[in-house]
Structures are given as C-alpha cells and as structure tokens.
Length: 61
Image 1 (cartoon, rainbow, N blue to C red):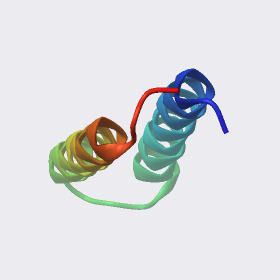
Image 2: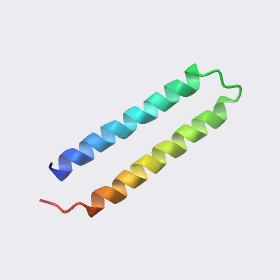
Image 3: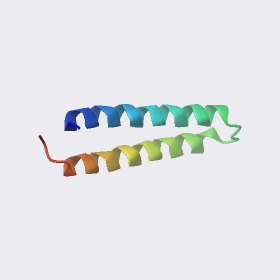
C-alpha cells in the first residue's frame, strides 16, 4: 500500500475515533464531562503520535 494512502487513512481514522470519543462523552451520563473531554484529547494525541512514529518507519516508494 502506498505511504500517502496510509497517511490519509490514518488521519481520517484517528479523527473518526476522536469524534466517537467526544460523542461518547456527551451521551454518557458522566457527572464531570471535563475529565471525559481531557481523556478524549489525550487518547487522540496518543493515537496520532503513535501513527506518526510508525509512518516514519515505512520507507517511501
């Protein structure tokens, strides 16, 4: 698979995961939603960081 396509799909996938996490925080009956938003942002940053590190290890074709 082309590295460019992997970058595009990983960006779309991580953004969709972030949106799902935000919807989960809003729908879930949490008393303090602020912590849920912080967790969603931290998870999103971790996912994008790991994907970025892994994508740099893939050689360009």
